[in-house]
Length: 182
Image (cartoon, rainbow, N blue to C red):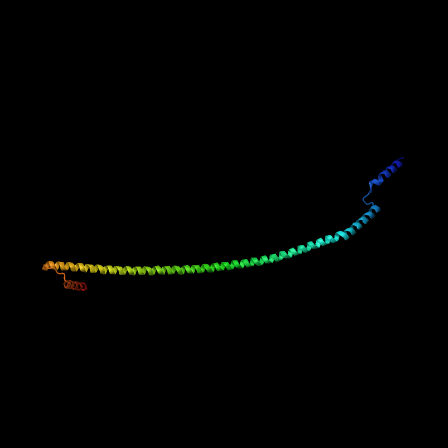
């Protein structure tokens, strides 16, 4: 009886329980798994693989083109950078040259201005000396006239007669000139 119950339990649980051991092979399942796998492999190979391969190749080509474009742009950027650096160096040299020229022009202009001021100073000084000499000569002439007039007035008092003729003035002027020489 115990054998009978075990047999019934075994038959009722056996189809639904699956393999008892992980090493147990079910050849029907194995065969159908391979058949489905091969059919799926063939369908993928026939329909999906060319699309996947084409998309992959297009992506690779796009990446290669982008890398080539990036390399070209990189080389252009390096060339532009080198050109900009050269322009900067040229601009600095030009600025230094212009600055040196400007300094030289300023120094030349300053020297010219100093020379002009010096010449103007000398001209003003010479004019002033001439003016002073002219004023001195005028003052001396005025003093001589005054001295002549005083001398004539004194002589007129002495001789009690008025002396105003030109010849009398000439006598006094000659006397004063003689006195200056001595």
